[in-house]
Image 1 (cartoon, one colour):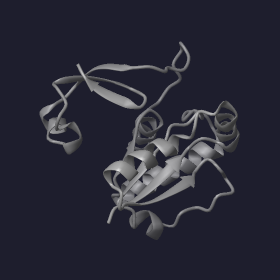
Image 2 (image 1 turned 180 degrees about the horizontal axis):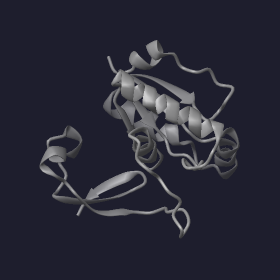
Image 3 (image 1 turned 135 degrees about the vertical axis):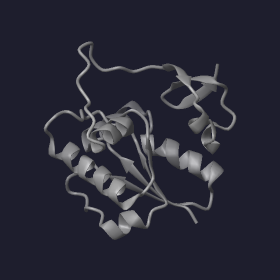
Image 4 (image 1 turned 90 degrees about the vertical axis):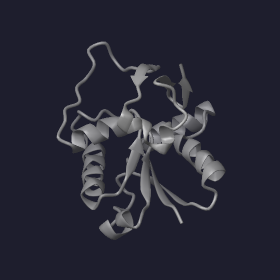
Length: 162
């Protein structure tokens, strides 16, 4: 059985703003997807930006089949204990060899975890579409890309062949 841990990486005030705006929560996209395509998966949502939430043990992390990272409105290059905590968890997951998936925030987290660098965009935050993503032989072998054409474009919650 799949055991999936979902990290909601938004701070509590941001989640309250989601409620006030009636836009839903990012973990709901993952929960909906999993209910459709892996209905027997065991899922757990953990609010990682909440410093009062318990730290997960290595045993709890290692018992997961995989981890899904939501986005976040925090900045990964800022000195912030919430971000530091997430980086520590990401490194722990890497050391435990637990597969993780995330877009945007998750990619930044992966880059920092692998000792890469993430810098502030001088033009401000980016929202939008990633265009002309090339499917390589290696990525084309992945089941997630089995129906993708040789070039795809993505936006925050969808992927369409070009």
